[in-house]
Image (spheres, rainbow, N blue to C red):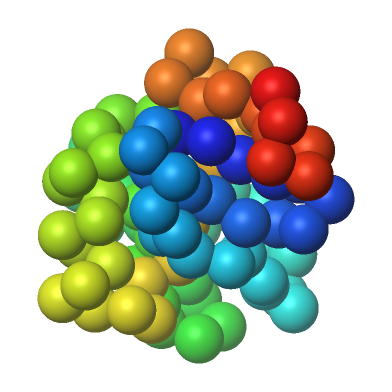
Amino acid sequence: MKYDPINKTLYTDKGELLKRLFCPYKIDWDKLPVTSANNRTCTTCNHLIIDTAYVSDDELLQMLQQNPSTCLKIDINQPNVTVIVNGKT
């Protein structure tokens, strides 16, 4: 995955847009109810939140196509994320 923290946009390694990230709630991940081993549910908006550290680009693309309102947790230090700025690493 490629993540642009300035534009808060996540792409696949191939450059396909996965999602523009925006959450007005800023809730602590550790305080959210666990849905499964790597997922949580927001107590404010009830959206599923996927921890992107544990899914591939293809899996995430499929999840977001099925449910575009799914929220994402991303850490710029995850091993499966490359930080980009203006399209460049």
